[in-house]
Image 1 (tube, rainbow, N blue to C red):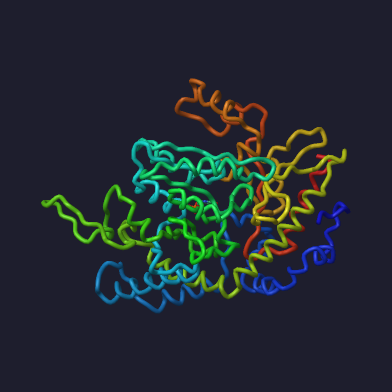
Image 2 (cartoon, helix red, strand yellow; image 1 turned 180 degrees about the vertical axis):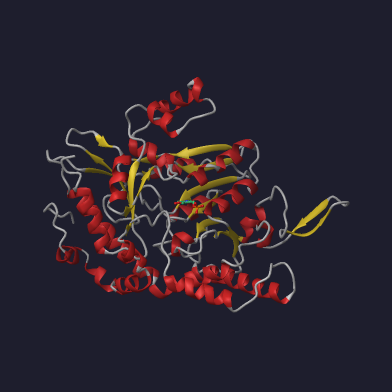
Length: 472
Ligand SMILES: Cc1ncc(COP(=O)(O)O)c(C=O)c1O
């Protein structure tokens, strides 16, 4: 429901358009109590896709756990080690419970973040000549990077385009690509459950379809899980990656690879390390990998951080993921409605949105560029400077999602190839070189992303900030 009256941010208009927001009011109290640092700093935080925020009670609970116990390095039977191993096991089972993942079917491999989980899959997936890596244009660079592992072992990497204006995949195109699984070969298909560029939610139904056609499915759930329920009793991808700080802010430095046990068994580790083996010998020149998830956890886990994962998951459960989901849906709808209604002095739209214009099958990540009355884009760096001055934490650029950026900004493969072919750019290119090279086209966009404790005031502040560009 777009508003018609430019600048009418009245709470009553919002309440009429999004009545279900009222039922999420408990988050306002929580925000005042537990996230008060936002008010102290006078900040408007709208960068949740980059990182969520943590409640002060998460810190208190974590410190209480550490203060009362001696935690030793795991991998031993001494009492302090046993204490640590108990908490590691608890963290694993809490993660399984949170995602409704049966311990008979799923393993949790703790990693430093989602990117490390992706690297584990990339380096261990048994790509061989003729095998295939299929992925959507819309992907984080840490998923794109797996193409290097695939190609170095003779596999092909194929991209499925996304299509403007919604930036979704053409279903017919997907069907054609999925039909190309190589019989008895290794076929890996990777996509994000939610785009960190456009907020598009790509269908989870693709998982069963792809697997039925002979693909192993790698689901990047990093941008999806903070505001959406991922039910691994219902969906059965082979691999799922995520970072916990994106869901509940603290701790950083812990992510995981959730893998179906049969899929994990297919991976071939390119090396071994402390903690990953049962036996390794120097003179016998042999090693035996552990037969559980620890075969994938190199060296010592961040064991002091792991109790905070259980605390964070319980924090989210106490608020209710469905409540978080509904609240961010309402706020995203309001933001989209208003951004669509804003006009430049000549009546042309003030912003161009990339991705779906309604809350249908999209999350709370909203990306756009500003336009002057003369039709020229306002450089996203100018927007960022002004946002910084207004104490608004938003993000600009391409968000490590070059495929999304290229499609949104109309940068073609031909332009990029001719740019990268120039002799001076064989091995070296700075972001400024890149800007010059694609001559005049915008190289980035502005991203506002909502999350856990976003509220109406945050969104109205962003809309007010955007309005200040009328006449610029
Ligand atoms: C969709 C998506 N995948 C992967 C990542 C990588 O996460 P991390 O930097 O925590 O490894 C991000 C980070 O923004 C993301 O948004």
